[in-house]
Structure formats: C-alpha cells, structure tokens
Image (tube, rainbow, N blue to C red; front, side):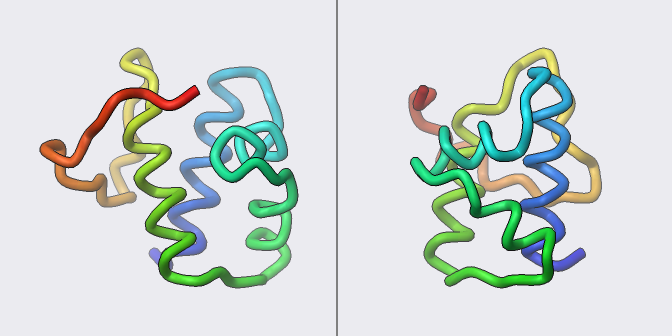
Amino acid sequence: MTQSSALITLAETLAAHQGVTHYAISMRALKKGDFFKKLVAGGDCRTATATRVLNWFHNNWPDDLAWPSDVPRPDARAKKRRIA
C-alpha cells in the first residue's frame, strides 16, 4: 500500500464512521478541505505533510473504530493528546 492510499483509507474509514466527508476530515487535520480530494485524484504530498496527517489520525482515532489492518500504525508511544 502506498503512503497516499494509506492516508485515503484512513480518511474514508474515519469519515464513514463519523458520517462526514473526507473534506471534513481534511479540515480537522490540516485546516484545509482539499487534501484528500487531491490524493484521490492521483496527487501527492510532501513527506512531512503525510507524517503530520498520519500522526493526526493516530492521535485522534476513535477507540470504538478498528484501525485498518493494512495500514501500519505509528508507534503507540508517540501517541499524544487528542487534537480536536
């Protein structure tokens, strides 16, 4: 799985769980709504941005939702407080 597809999987899984679109997830994670739209369309992002988004998912993933098994999760020791 590519880094982009992993981020898309996380966004779509969380969006479906919360009943929102990936636009809403992008707004929460990056304060801009087009991030996942660009990835879905075949775009790419900087490694630093991908790491930031992955860490946002890790820190904000709901306890009642299983993390997708095909997406490696960051080290649990790196988990910090949830960011709204």
